[in-house]
Amino acid sequence: MQWEIVIGLEVHTQLSTNSKIFSGASTTYGAEPNTQADAVSIALPGVLPVLNKGAVERAIKFGLAVGAHIAPRSVFARKNYFYPDLPKGYQISQFDLPVVGQGSLTIQVEPLSGNAKPYEKVVRITRAHLEEDAGKSLHEDFHGMTGIDLNRAGTPLLEIVSEPDMRSAAEAVAYAKTLHSLVRWIGICDGNMQEGSFRCDVNVSVRKPGAPLGTRREIKNLNSFKFMQQAIDYEVQWQIDTLENGGKIHQATILFNPDTGETRAMRSKEDAHDYRYFPDPDLLPLDISEEWKQQVGATLPELPQAKYKRYVTELGLSSYDAAILTASRAMAEYFEACVSIIGASNAKLCANWMMGEMSARLNRENKEIVDCPIAPKQLADVLLGIIDGRLNHTNAKVAFDEAWNAPPASIDKYMVINAAASSFYWFGSTAVISNIIEIKGLKQVSDIGAIEKIVDEIIAANPAQVAEYRSGKEKVFGFFVGLAMKASKGKANPAQLNEVLKKKLAG
Image (cartoon, rainbow, N blue to C red; front, side):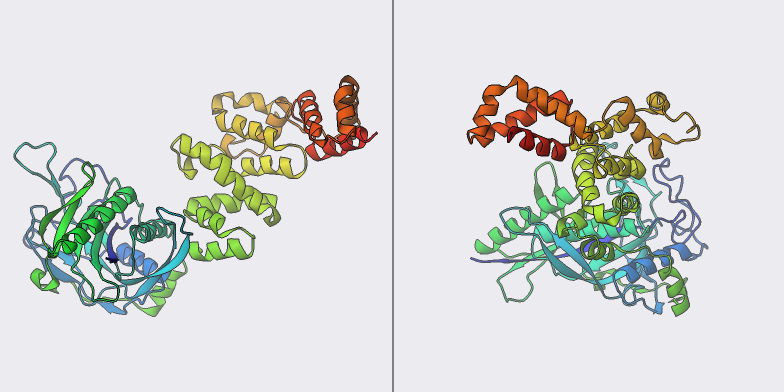
């Protein structure tokens, strides 16, 4: 029987403010338990919340980035429920009047299996509302008890709710990754999933094609894209098996266990009426003027989708290349800094090196692009060496590796040629690559006379192979190329070498 998968996401994004959403307490991660649990966050008698302007501006930024409606007036409400890490018995959130209304996010979907090609999809965003985070319940270090850390209580959150538009784990993961990249790109969240800055709840249901929506179950608190894919795959199969065996799906909140790869029910799922939302009497409605919205909009950088289209249309990159280079703002900025030096006509060469040599090294050393020891200027120098014929590809890789591995303490040996560069910063030096090329003897041989001398000596030393070539066995040509490159220590200009060899072997 054919089943259609229906998925929607609720993403809790911790906003990057220094203080909490309704008080001046610090939001710094990793402090001693309960040292940042101030009177407002735990609602001691007589305290009043005061809204954090920075949190509102970050919400506006997000709304503008996804083309959403920004409500001129929104209201905060109390969401009432009991949980040990919510000592005041309610969470300040937004219900019927959120700050961000309907928008959309375009995603590039890479199918997780099979031969299906990547495709583009638009996922609708229902809303994004501001709220305060709860504390944390700690179980690992307490036998038979639960520890409560309220440091996180009151940290500003933007909960981003999608429509149930996704039809596979691949689409859900692509949406979550795109959203994760976007909130980091516009600077509203650090995106640290291990620290809980970006947490996903996934609503999953199945139905027969064309039928009404099935009963959903919500997988809570997924902080890994890998776990998200595994949890969805397991949950989908569980629901299908249950229905095909005559069972019934009951709405529930469930957890995913990465050790077993299984989901399990935690509690029956509440609906909105169970929370008894009502306007918070201590907070006035939030008014956002058109002028304020425009001021915030002026601080937005060029967005990933706009860069993606520009890279394809103006720089001639493939869709795949453009998608990789706009996966993070740091990657795009590195790419553009390099291209600004080598020229837009050589953008593809830069893309190839960044996604090839550089990405391979970063992956092996488990580093991000911001930790790359090769600065854009240095990579540009390597590429300029290729472009102007000073370096062949092999020696370009040698220069790249030398610069990558050279620690600050030993970089002086590469400054012998340019001792005047006394104020240089080794990560960003334009002198390093040229000096490495000089000292390591990597410069490509483009002197026709020198190449002809090498070729003449090889032809003279290998008369039998010359006779074979001249008798029509053209495959022997590679033999001569190999000998010539060995004789030149890999530095002969390949195009010139081939031209001279063909001329000389032709007699």
